[in-house]
Image (cartoon, rainbow, N blue to C red; front, side, top):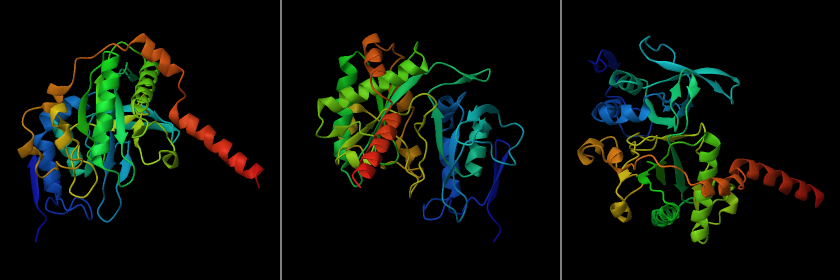
Length: 319
């Protein structure tokens, strides 16, 4: 039988009835239909922001890709950025229209991640937001994540800030705070301070410990998604069985939320309008005392690296 083919917005698609990835239980058509249905909501979240995607090839594991896929049409816009990992310049996709989004579906790009800054004339602008990423321990109850989200909301309110909340599409929650008027270093510092304040409210259930072994079964309040760090945008699928979607949640409905409750096959029927755009507060100024507090807190990755070195030395010294 000939492979299913069709065209939308000048983009030609093939193998639409094939599984988008082994074991995911979702066809490539379902992914395409999801992007098509949410194009009007996804494109504004992606526009102007260098895209990091997670792609899948048949018979292979999902992989992260920042550079432009080979064979891309000349109408796909890109921006040159520097990759610290590969020590070279890469050309990242800019999703400025529906056509580019649909083309990404044909590339089996099943996750869409962007930073909190847009690129103008090749340079990153000021951050437009920050995120507290709440991760449960392995096998942990999602109710604990909800409890920590409420702690984080209280920590935010205590310093006059507000956030919108969404599932990550995996196991946790994202609390997103739109901001303006602060450089990357100050936004990163404020994020660290907010994470620390959240953990202090109930250290029995929340922690900022970067090393997994030190978390003690608590929910990790991750403050590291700042600077050029990225998060999956609202309405993005995740590379999990069924392709669950990062879905907006109303604060009043948080107790009834499920971490993977919305998928690409039912999102269009369950999400009306643009609840994420409606939930996001107006951009807010960061309090100076919060920023100053955060600058006194070590960057989690750096602190974990030094602690690891200290422990290894201690182990060697102990024989």
